[in-house]
Structures are given as structure tokens and as C-alpha cells.
Length: 551
Image 1 (cartoon, rainbow, N blue to C red):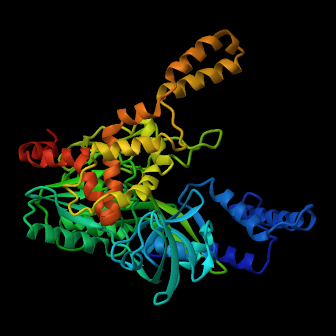
Image 2: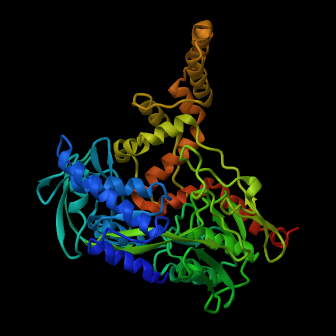
Image 3: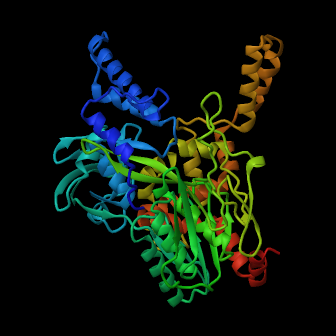
């Protein structure tokens, strides 16, 4: 969005603060007098604490805590960034950074390569998922995540010597160049049936629309006569790219989104500016509970114009617009300046940050306060809670034991230990997790430290807490102990009961060690309920048309 021009009064306020003119003669009820008064109180308090507190305080940390505490009362998207964090902001906004091109995490006290980015330096040099980084340019970084992260980011053209520890192999040394990492918005597109093409979009950084448009054109060349736009897990990004991507499927001159804020300059309407790429091709948009912001705009636009069918889960519900503003000393802040509204007029913001509960918590917009809107064909849609899919896919959550396995990264650890026993994976489709591999995992996993609780165990624990608080525990302690004994889980048995989902996750684990994120994605399609439902719908043209017609 274009930069918001502050009103003259704000500029005058900034000037007064800059020159230390803290006194102000406006009436007591004047808002700007109150601002200056409280700033003066805050500065005086800071000065006195710094001078008188029994221990030395770090003024940077102390002030940062105050800023973060203040902004936490607004919403999670209004944030302050110090000069040291500006690079992270740039990466968030553009998808670009200087580095080796790999996702690195701190797991069990180890600095570990979680995923090399396909085609970038780490991948080309030979670094693998599960490699533990132990030194960079001869400097020990074992167990030092912040230091390692600093050393593998920087200006392009520099090279670094990285030593890793690879399980069952030993120490390995690599020379890896730092380069400009421009992560794609469309990490994958391809045919998922004889006539259906899928575009997986993960971001809305600059050029996202160009990537989606290029993918659509290439899929049509490959024979796609129907398209699935997968926005699941997409956290959003640039509003302008949401407009441009919508424009791929709807004609020039159509309203995409309206923004409304406190300042007149934040009130704007955004319409499509170009000729569309394809207004007729049958379209399904996949959403999940983590599809947010710009992703919700695109899904909402396709729904409001009855241009495509939305399938999956209710989206996140982020109907707020942010703008990045420069501050003094090269710092910045990102501030919520407006709410956005889809063409039908609905704002899909799910959490009401304006009206907090008495304890300061934030609640969802009540169903009774949600307003009915209509799509172009007259279908009912509602505001105040994300984009509701036209076809809701009820996705069963993982079993408690599987959640425990995932929380402790046991799949990655097992993959590190077991990968050498597997032959090279030449075909994602043909590769299978045999019962032998599954049993080896099960026997290994039962010896590992990880915790999980079944829903019944959780409820039993709550009952025990209530009984203890009310003084009735001694009366039912025998019965509770008997229940606890019956519910005590056998890890081996629970893993066996979750065999199907664990085998699927094991396949994704091993496939992505060879084919990286794209491989994991392709492997996940085999048991993808949302994708199956989309393919089922697109194979029935009359049902597809009937849904869009509101029948």
C-alpha cells in the first residue's frame, strides 16, 4: 500500500517531542495533551528507575519490554523492529535474504539442517536434512544456534566453510557460498490427474501473481482443463499481489477488496486492472485453518463472484491490513491501519481485538453478531470468522501418540539413523513404507523419551485436579487409581493403532531427504482428503455448476 501521510497535528506532535517541549497548554481533555503528559511520565519513570534501582538495568532491554508490552494490548500484527531486526522484516516482505538457502533449527541442543531449499547453495553443496552444524569457518558453533544463524547469513558472493556431523557417516566438510535467496511463491505445480492441474502457492511476496500465471499457462499446455489453487497454510502477504492473483481468474474492472481505517488515506478500493488469463476454467481453491490475510482475500473473491468452489477448512480469519513505518535510529514498526472487506462487503476478521474481555483476553466474534452477505449468484456467506469453505472437509486430527512423536521430532531422528539402510528412492509414487520399516520404527520409538496423553487421560487428570481442589479426592482416590491403571497406555500398541498415519509420515520423511519440500508435498498428496474431494468435485461438472449456482 502507498505510505499513509500523517496529519499535520501528528507532525507537530513529533516535532515537539523531538525538541523536548514536554509542557503543553491545551485543555486537559485534549487527546494530544494526554499523549504528551503520559510520555513525560514514562520518560521520568524510566530515568528514575535507571538511576535508583538496586541493580543495573539494560536500557535497551528494559525499553524493548515496555514497547512490546504496550503493543501486546493491540493485536499480534502491530510490532516494533529494532535496527538489528530489519533484515527479518525485509525477508518477510520480499521473501529474499542472503544466506546458504536452508531452514535451520535448534533441536535437542543441536544446530540442525531441517530442510535445504531446492537449487540453492546448501542443496548444491550437498548438505542434507538432519546434518548437525558443528563449525563455521573454523569457529565452534556446536549447540550455539544464534551464532550459527549469524554466520550463515550475509552478503552474497561470500563463501563459508561448514563442518557438519552426519549420523552413521561422521564429520563432513563443505564450502558453501552465501547468495541471494529468493524463495518462490509457487514451490510446486503439476498435473494431479489426466485433466486437473494443481498450483501450490505458499506466499504473497512480489511476483507471486507472475508465478501463478506462469504455472497456469504451463499446466494448460500440459492438458489441464481444470485447476486447483492450493492456499492451505499460506499466511498471506502483499495485498497488491492478492489483487493481481484474483485478476488471473476474474475480468478487468472488478472490485477485489476495500480497506477502511481511522485515517481517510487508509480508505481505498482495489479493482482488477488487467485482462484476465482465464475466466472460464473450472477452479477449486483449497484452504486450511492457517490460510490467512491475502490468501483469504483470494479465496473470498473467488467465492463472492462464484468463480470457484472453496474446499477444505475454515480459514484463519485475519481481516486486518498492516503498513511498515520508519522510526528513528533505523528502527521500524508494522502497524495495523485498516480492516479489509471482500467484494460482498464482509470482513472476515475472526478475533475482536477492539473489545477485549475483562481479563484482557481476546474472544472470537460471536455468531449472533455475524452478518449475512450474498455472493453474486445469491449464495449465503458470513463475516466475522474467516472464509467458510463451500465444501467442508472434516480432517481427523492425529492420534495422541502421533502428536507425541511429532513434538519430539522422532521422525527426523529415526530418519537420520535409518536412511543408510534404504536404497535410493527413484520414484516417489512407487516408494512404500514396508511393514518391516514400520516395525523397526515402532521398536525404536518405544525406547525414546516422549510423552503423550489420550483424551480420556486428559479428562481424568482434570477430574483429579477438581477433586483435589474441592477436598473430595480421598473419597474417590481408589477408583481414580483403578481408572489410571486401565488407561495406562502401551506405546507399542498405540503406535500400532496409528499405523496408517505414521506410515504416511514416515514416507514423507524419507522422500523429502531426496526430493526436499517438493517431494514431501507430492508424497502427502497420496492421502490428501482435501485434494481427493477437489478431484471428485471437478470430475462432476453438473455438481460443480450446481454449487456455484447456489443449488
